[in-house]
Image 1 (cartoon, helix red, strand yellow):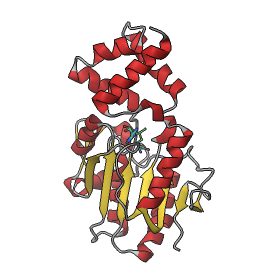
Image 2 (spheres, rainbow, N blue to C red):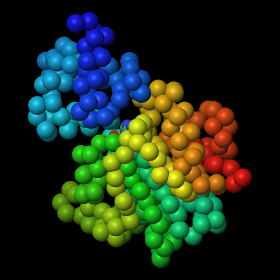
Image 3 (cartoon, rainbow, N blue to C red):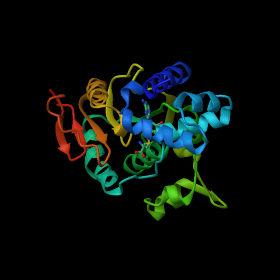
Length: 261
Ligand SMILES: C[S@@+](CC[C@H](N)C(=O)[O-])C[C@H]1O[C@@H](n2cnc3c(N)ncnc32)[C@H](O)[C@@H]1O
């Protein structure tokens, strides 16, 4: 079997098992990551490693976690979260008192929980909707548990740490009040239908391995999913260069707005 055939077979098996379509991800990067892992476990082929790892539920879950790269933390890139709190959300609140927010690719939940904390500060008595989705079922289970290490909280201010976590040993657990603000759901951004009518969408540090075509399609789908005046917030290295072509205006760097009509 050639390397190409091996890769094709691996992709087909992965897609059948998980619905993850690696044709929509950048091949060289994904190949490098997967082969590194396979070699670490003594395998020289993609499909040989797949056949091994699929046999054990925990090993397979860890493999998917590795493949989807779900590193995250609370208030990731704090200066951008500060803009969200001081400029972006207050602007959205001038048009709608109850916001419909989507954290797309939410990983361990740090992003949607950070949002919930901001909303509690800005509008303590309003119940907004915060939808948080990810492709990876295991990571969603961790997100729902809401338990973290201090390292994942390093960008947070002390007041919020005290207010929104209970500490047991080395574990920081998000309070029930904050957990109750989030609706977690499995969703594949490259395959599933999108809900509509969002005031704010966060999609940060998710598209790193998507092809350019997949990214364009995703940002076009987000555009449709936003209300007029709604804002898309992307990662600190993910500026959308062709945002005008996709219909957005620039609200601030890394925040793109659907025009009000
Ligand atoms: C690095 S984390 C980013 C978490 C958070 N947004 C942040 O900025 O800290 C990337 C997440 O994107 C998810 N992901 C990757 N491909 C996806 C897809 N096609 N649909 C939905 N989520 C995806 C991964 O499972 C992972 O949890």
